[in-house]
Amino acid sequence: MAGVSVRVPRGTTIAFVGPSGCGKSTLLKLMAGLVTTSRGAVLVNDVPVTGPLRNVGMAFQNPVLLPWRSVLGNVLLPLEILHGHGEPRVPARELWEWRAAELLATVGLAGSEGKHPRELSGGMRQRVSLCRALVHEPEIVLLDEPFAALDAFTREEMWELHQRLRQRWTFTGVLVTHDLREAICLAQTICVMAGSPGRIAHVHEVPLPYPRTLAQAYGPEATDLIRLMREQIRSAREAA
Image (cartoon, rainbow, N blue to C red; front, top):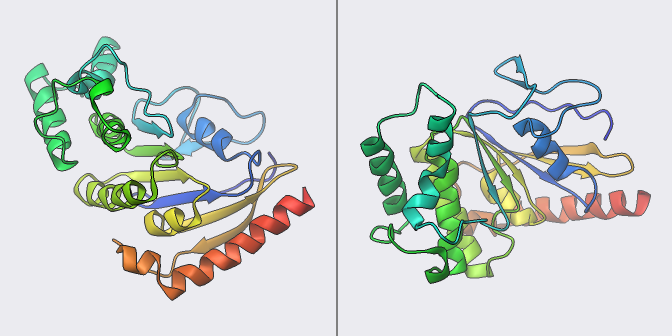
């Protein structure tokens, strides 16, 4: 990866799209402090990232829920980890559970607290994963193709759910996706990446008000932008 420079304003979502192997997921790991830079720096609130951050929530293509824990137990996991590390902002156990229950109700899973992952559909498991990413009220939420494994209808439901969650719990989002329409639906800024070495080749500001409806995501402005980005990604792949 070379010459990558990007700024994400607080409270917005930025998306990274591009061919496989161009460094999209590596960028997420750098932002989370899971890997370190060989050159340059990653700053969060103007402070260099030198190790794993505690104010970050993460959701992946695979929800990675612990099968032996209940839905509530999976959602509470980040708070338990922070409590174990002596994080002073972690509330009392009763507030943990209240916050988790509130999130689960928001995503339509009220009453599912005692169920286990094997009892849930793929879409329900991904909702639990989003709740787990948000339960400790992180400043930053990193999303690595979080809805790619879902069917088209459920994926669109998750786009709408993500926007509702972002309106209720303000956070700065970083999204990696191969779905250009998903990027348009969820992000204010889209970076098209190229490979060999990984770099940002094009930056697009999405010309649609937020939050966005599915009608807007499938409208002419979105379709024109998708056509343009598809050509840019095709050119990047051929040039690699």
